[in-house]
Amino acid sequence: MQKTNEIKASLKREYDLYSNAVAFYKKAVQELEEKYQLTTQTFLKRFETGQMGDEADYFDWYAFVKLLARWRKTRSAIRSAIQ
Image 1 (cartoon, one colour):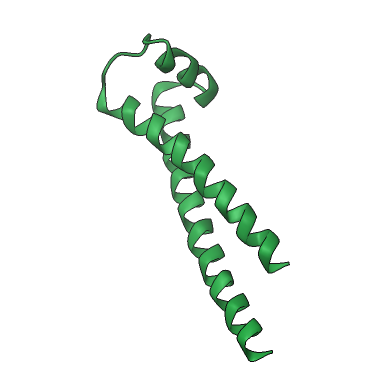
Image 2: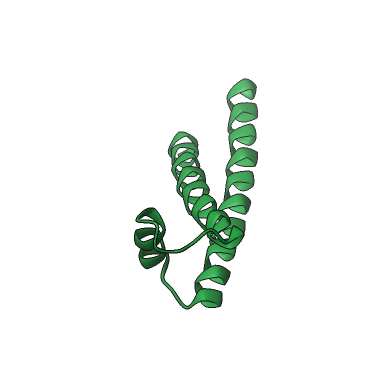
């Protein structure tokens, strides 16, 4: 029983870590949406078709969106394991 509690506590810490990462990337994406007055969906469509140019912000934005999706997916899996 103690081992199970230790595993759950460890998973809870991981969940919290992933939640913090999700919040960080979500905020970063929102700031870029505001800065460029574009939704992420519109940005992705334009970026992936080469219509946005080569500004560093655009590459960051693209990476943040992809990382946000990955962190959310893993966080969801951890949440399922905890419940």
